[in-house]
Amino acid sequence: MKLKCLIVDDEELSRALLETYIDMIDFIDLVGSFENPLETLSLIKEENIDVVFLDIEMPEIKGTNFAKLINTHTQMLCLQLLAKNMRLKDLN
Image (cartoon, rainbow, N blue to C red):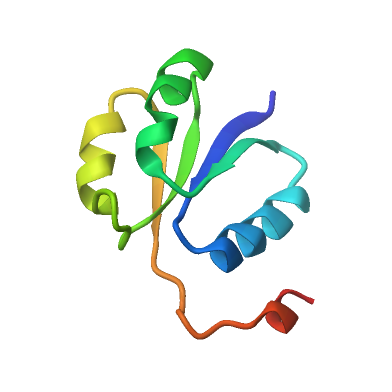
């Protein structure tokens, strides 16, 4: 059985990096990747998401506050804080 996961991060590069790593893991299925956490609320409830990779610093809502909203709908939250000065070439 594959774990269903979501990525929620306002940084495009961070989402791309996580998507690359998740693609390498056989037992995780990426359901979606989102910039705005508020857009994921209904999906998290409807799709029975197991894991959410969640950025801490986002403009719409802090990741820690969003985690409180969804913690009863997921099995695991992975809060992330990635370096802001990463470059696209770092993905290769």
